[in-house]
Amino acid sequence: NAGVMQNPRHLVRRRGQEARLRCSPMKGHSHVYWYRQLPEEGLKFMVYLQKENIIDESGMPKERFSAEFPKEGPSILRIQQVVRGDSAAYFCASSPGSGGGQPQHFGDGTRLSIL
Amino acid sequence: QKEVEQNSGPLSVPEGAIASLNCTYSDRGSQSFFWYRQYSGKSPELIMFIYSNGDKEDGRFTAQLNKASQYVSLLIRDSQPSDSATYLCAPQGPGGYQKVTFGTGTKLQVIP
Image (cartoon, rainbow over all chains, first blue to last red; front, side):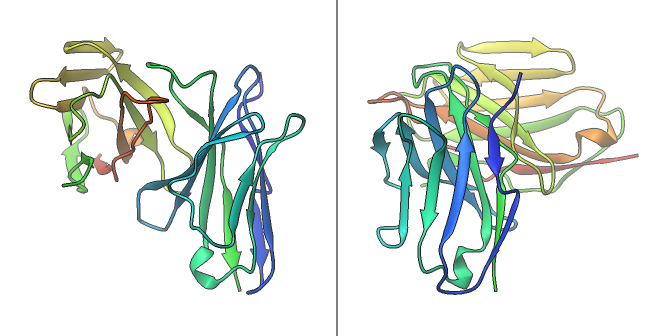
């Protein structure tokens, strides 16, 4: 009964490199959400995806950030040319649908550190 | 005005007392309300949800909802040191896909 799986748990990158964060939703869930959390701050919505579709990317920075959820495989959050300000915990959540009363279940997160 | 407002705390209560966590929201169309608990350095964990006005009880937790006042609260009875965490209020609104919006959370400290 696997929950939401994120990997890696910790990721260290140097400025200018690319970071790829992966998320496999819970079995039976087809909706994926990505959030960013800075230390001592709240969860900030980034993007909501269904299989092969981006539904809402209103929280995603316009440059350097992209997300996908292909037909096969995990959802990927990609950050190009990382900067120190990208250091944060990135959480993925999934739900079976987006209708009322369907809560999101979170993975353990990826802690991204930029040197 | 923030979409979801919570007192950041910390809220300190003695062990065994009732902890009361409050949340107000701006979207009058919000339909469902979730409470998550987040321990330091961990991911959010769903603990309660409520749809209808009134109270909903689950063990030591009671969620209270008043849609007219746009107010939702979480009561924790017989607080334990293990309840020390940040509690996130998350209303789910109407609209195309009923987006969930998270508050910044209230930090609860239960003093032994």
